[in-house]
Image (cartoon, rainbow, N blue to C red):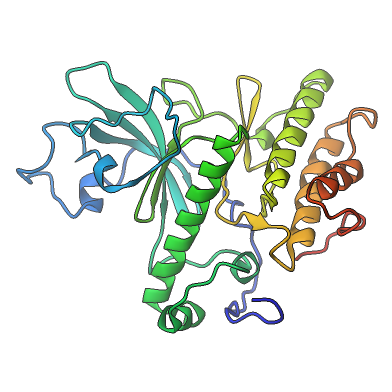
Amino acid sequence: MREHDPFPEPARRRRRRFDDDEPRHRRRTVPLAELDGRDGADPDGPPSGDRWSTWAGADHGPEPRPGWVVTEHAAVDTELGVVKSGKEADVHLLERAVPGTGRRSLLAAKRYRTAEHRMFHRDAGYLEGRRVRRSRETRAMANRTAFGRDLLAGQWAAAEFAALSRLWSAGVAVPYPVQLHGTELLVEFVGDADGTAAPRLAQLRPDPGALADLWHQLVDALLGLARHGLTHGDLSAYNLLVHRDRLVVIDLPQVVDVVGNPQGPQFLARDVARIGEWFTARGLAPDVGQPDTLLEELLVTLGMPGAGGRLPRGSQP
């Protein structure tokens, strides 16, 4: 897709970003057994927890695999709560453990909604270059049928899994993608062993020294994406976690191919402008870093010097 958009987005009264919902923590409300179509009395279910591990039937993350990843077929998944609720996906806290042993790990389970879910904010722009070969599937997605919405949900989940796998292997600060099973993506839980999630950057008020260090980590992460021709596509202080002073980039389903997408340079400029405004408002010293300089450096890395021009002022791709 280049000159026109075959997936027109229905009109809305109010535009919202994909990740503009605040995180909500609550007790478990939907057992995994229900998601699997089981009730608690299923004799094939595990003796404890909510379901058997889905590792065997899933696509797996890149190797070498971290040692904390539980791959045993006898492992059991237990739902511990909801980390964040959004319009397109919910993030749950999940424990995967082997009963009778000390093998356990905490995972973030991102579950994309299927036929009933609302579409991503301006999803057509992000979908440039993500095509399917069958005309029936293309029509279904364009018409937002239930089947088409299921296909789109699967595309978003697969796109995020692929991006995380590629970037993690390249050393970019993203969570390790453990597995993809349908529209459920399991990734490394960024937080403490007791289940306390790392705060988002937007929640912090770092001192000048910490702010400068976070800026340098951000520059390294964005350069890592640029070396692969990518930009986040929806970058903000809400899509960055800080765990023990380490910056981690999250929420990458809408990752944009800057070169292949006709709107790529605008997405890149918007990413830099939005996160740059946050750092500037918190007092980032000009001699430490500046958004305009960062954008220029990223464009050079992408082999597109001058493609983005100056940072946009309130413009949207």
